[in-house]
Amino acid sequence: MMVTTRRCCWIAAAVWLMVAVAGRAAEPASPGQPPRFFGLEAAGERIVYVCDRSASMAEPDGLPLAEVKRELLESISSLGDSRQFQVLFYNQRLTMFSPGGGRGLPLFPDPRTLDDLRRFVDGVSAAGGTRHAEAVMAALRLAPDVVFILTDADTGDDLSEDELRRLSERLGQARCMVVQFGGGAGRRSPRLARLAEMSGGEYRIVEPGR
Image (cartoon, rainbow, N blue to C red):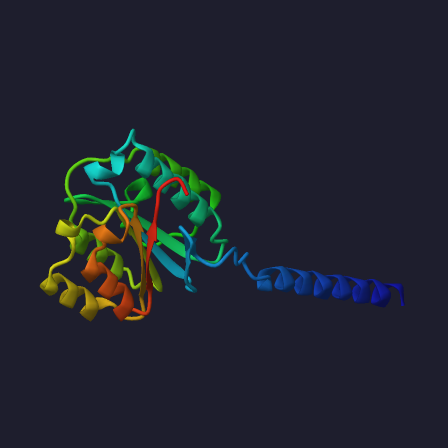
């Protein structure tokens, strides 16, 4: 009788342990906040940030790029555990976040990845010209739900009609949320604005420091 009682206790304990472990495994990851960048917000699980680092982003006194870096890190830190992200900085060339020599694929914002990201972002400086198309295309190849594009939007650097066509053909489900950083409506990039519209996204002008 005592053996039977002990066996029942062991079975009950084993069942309780299995239920507890299964319950913990079923707990959802923290969803965090909806993806948000300089006031633009869009639903999605895979987010790519594409940020202009051309020479004009250093004027005055390096402040525009510094503000972008702060907003970028804050946005990614707020994504929660269940979303993935990638970061691209660009001028004439593209620089992608690839910790440990990785392949540049989207990553979950775990503490170690965020530490690597801070070091990557700290090392970015403003220099050179601006070529949007290659950077945006690289972002779209990652099959994102949302692409946040930030640029100070010199009109002469806008997409060409051919670049706009090629990017629009690659959009898939991605929504392009374009932040024009400073310059007012007079420095608007019409084709970047059209790309945002085609994708169901938005185009917003943000003045630095506000």
